[in-house]
Length: 225
Ligand code: BJW
Ligand code: ZN
Image 1 (cartoon, helix red, strand yellow):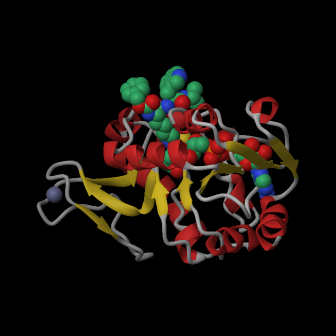
Image 2 (tube, helix red, strand yellow):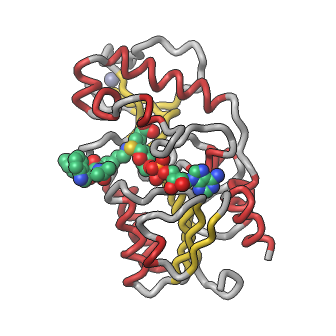
Image 3 (cartoon, rainbow, N blue to C red):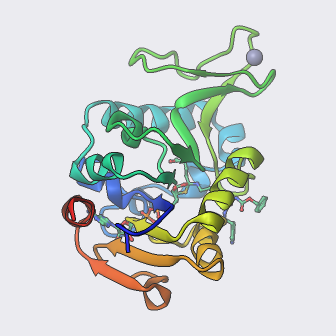
């Protein structure tokens, strides 16, 4: 099916970066076991304590800066596809994927809460909390709970799944909306859905093929064939 597909879309989640050493959100070793999302990943949490919020993101930036893409990222970089990712780590781009739609933003982007300017900063010595040239407080360029996704980015993701023949869904628990809704959208547009995950998810019963295992193992096998 992959070989014959005219158009392939991929939706990835934190599980695809797990084998690189980036913690996932849910599950036994997930970030949400250790930290409460409402304390850190909401606009209210940022407004309450920008420094605490930034310290957490800076800790994660440090983790991510020290890891490398894994064979799952590499396999997807070889596949001609539109790659929709919920991940903010940038590892798909590091692996060489060109057509990446980051629906939850990027941990390497900063955005001014005053003037809206967005810029990249990879420096480990970022001032915490960072400020914009205009003096305004900067926030991480990610999408928090209760926030709308960037409409242009979201439109591109919807277009990709509406027009694909095959959708690969890898390493996501598929519980966070609207991203998880891309899967039924693809399905209702006639796409074949292939899921790759370590365990069964909310989606598994409604996909065409569910491969149980590590994305760093299964994705290279699929793409190499
Ligand atoms: C492997 C593996 C290996 C491991 N190989 N597999 C009730 C209350 C409040 C809000 C809501 C609500 N009901 C619905 C909402 C809306 C909310 C939502 O969906 N909540 C649900 C959780 C209930 N959504 C939103 O708020 C979104 N915005 C929105 O809806 O706007 C409209 C609106 C406006 C105003 C008010 C209300 C609505 C925005 C969602 C933003 C999500 N943001 C985060 C943080 C990003 C920044 C950051 O990184 O800090 O995005 S949350 C977190 O979850 C992150 C992820 O992208 C996202 C998805 O997680 P993912 O990637 O699926 O990871 P995990 O950990 O869940 O799963 C990993 C999977 O991998 C597992 O299945 C493992 O088995 C597997 N795995 N290792 C293969 N090696
Ligand atoms: Zn500014």
